[in-house]
Length: 409
Ligand SMILES: [Zn+2]
Image (cartoon, rainbow, N blue to C red):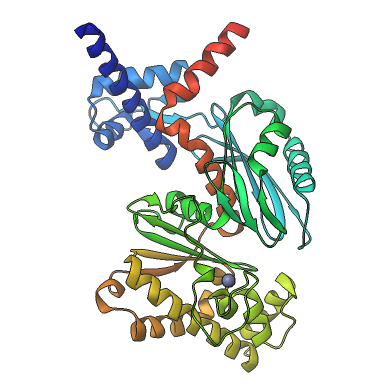
């Protein structure tokens, strides 16, 4: 290999890394002036101008020079992404619902559809057919189809990220099913498809666009029918060897406790999950969201039974969170789903337990906050997952598609 070829390869690698740095900033932060991009990426003014020019030519971003408003000097052009220039399809299989969304660059939700799903067991065929139908029902799907560069799927189960198989999803009655491969075939979009656990993706969404923004060490704890967790360490998701990490709902907390759907006894979710709350409040443990709403309404009205049930959940929440704080030294703990909703009722008890049980050094650094993205967090996280290959190397994921389209046109 000649020396100048090596130099050429290196400069191509640098160019692609720089394109990635720019598109990541614009995706995460929204419109930025060229000057802000210079400051944030450390690239020179002329490099930014040239690289932005490539994105403009590809229809990925637009530049607009703001009007002069009596300040000296020429204002720096503002660069913003074109949300429909690069689109991902985000899907979610949740305990109570199925959802599909077209999400544009910058995290712009172009369109979303969510339908209620009765709890219980469904076959892989049924879920795949429902997701394909939901996707086809997106009015924007036909319009944005050619811009779709990836599919992300959030699943209420334990997911093997490498092969897209759902290792186990007790709520669906699934063991080791190839959801990724089946969806890829049924959707026929010919783009990469990535799957992950819904709490892991809720964590990613809260990190990028919600209550965990600006923190690099985060634990997202989501209470639904079960209890899920997503852990971010040093800005990166903690996946474990196969993507199974973060099953904090099955952290063993009470050897004298009750049996968990996973088969063990005394898992954390048997003390803090929806069924525990409903049973403590004297309601049917299988009553679902309507009964949870009723407990919250009772507590708001001052019912002692409801308040005592919430107090118990708050104590067990504090106990589990104290262990997590001691082990992982997070900067922020984000409470999603059920825990976000009951936070106003449990925060005092939870804080007291944290003070009683956690080591002072890590405790003094942690902030416990309710989630801000609500029910959509896992779906938005699925979109972020699908954007990831593009953000890492926009030239590789987008260049060839643009070239193809130009040939077709
Ligand atoms: Zn369990």
